[in-house]
Length: 393
Ligand SMILES: *Cc1c(COP(=O)(O)O)cnc(C)c1O
View 1 (cartoon, helix red, strand yellow):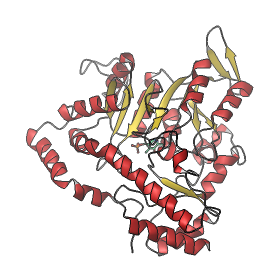
View 2: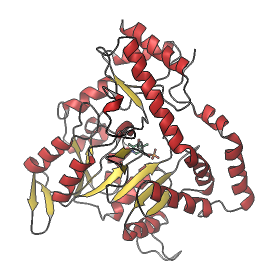
View 3: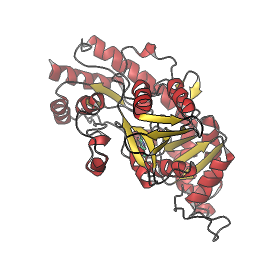
View 4: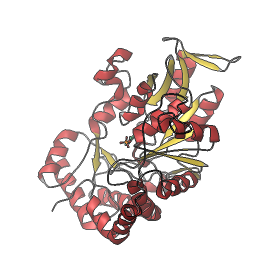
């Protein structure tokens, strides 16, 4: 049996007539950029994420970069991010001219630890109540924002993070690349921060066949800035207020995404059922004392959507050997992520060393994303768990 980690073709087959016709409609219209499809998707996603405005961009990385620019972040500023996330979260901070400040994660959710965030702010920074500025004592840089990442589709503890942000006058950009549709205490992912960013990269839960991204926000001033920035800083056209970039979501991708959006909630529900089946299977195979599942009990979730299972990530000893064994047995897996950001070569200049963030460093050696997509069959899931059991025992 072959079980890929992700299967894009089965999903395409299930909605093929609609996708094909949406693509042909764009081609026949001759309008391939800045058309109705992009505007519709901007409105849809703004509403879906509990915001007022949406700004389509070329990818999720640009979305973070542009959101930071909209907040006025630049040189001499610092931005807090988890060390255990996709590179773009911190890469975008550097692209904006600022410095990333990394924080360790929680062992159970792999999300940024609000406790360690609080610790860092209280012990390593000085807050000037008069001007509302938070300064990193060690570097003298002003800390301007936090980028919480809802990793694997599971929500960060947003009440605690927002409390810290509000107390220390920090802006919040939610990186929702993996968490579209997730909810924390009844509120959607993307509805907590000043801006939220989404990615439509093929692996994401709402994905196109290529690249795409979106920024959502409740504030018109940010929407305005992002729209100008994404078109070379021009408004009106050919009159440039500042130097921006070219970062467009184009009509073909938006048309595809508008079709797929109608199925998003159903697909998220299917992912939840897949996660439930994994949990049942790992239990039946008596693996719970050898393998840590994403959640001890899926019903521990405060809401059904607290985790939308962008990835189903297990924590195992001997991870690399297990991955190899599964590969030999036709089972695809991935490691998100094998090296923490504070240990990346490009961030050497920041002065972090091994041991700085032990929880994240450990996670990077033990996490394994096993096959997860809405259309995976029970039979395939059982095969995956049976093979993991064979290896572990
Ligand atoms: C995918 C992803 C991004 C970047 O999205 P792209 O569209 O690939 O540029 C940013 N942050 C996280 C956490 C991601 O998973």
